[in-house]
Image (cartoon, rainbow, N blue to C red; front, side):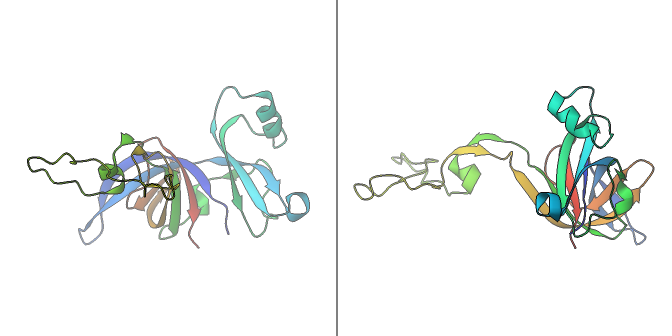
Length: 205
């Protein structure tokens, strides 16, 4: 396992390779992040690195006290990554796009776009009922229970409800380009959420 980095989705575009082939890519503003806590087997029972991202003007006193130990400015987001060896990290250390290289494969985690309350056809891809004259079941979900036995609806039944807005991880995205000066990472393919969405990037290997 390796330490990851936090960032924000900038948006999508396309780039061309030397053969003129176009690739749909996503631009990510990644880091810089700071190491805010180091957990070891002796202190926490496992090895992990906590990093912070996104400077803010004010935080609660407990949050400020936690960050004061590492000597970093107030940071809005904290994330933890399990690592095999914590000896190469120290409190306050800057983690940026230099931890990745072009051609590397990433796993990107973010919150998907929320689509509000949706019916079963849109949410679970149910088929609709007959649209002919006399039919009263067009987009209704249909029967949801079995009658007297068991006399209830089983948990987990596919029903209408809120769609989207969940944590999604997209695996095996290839890094096509890295701009170290602007802290930009360009990956091939799409990632969850709208522009500005908070993302967590970690090496797939």
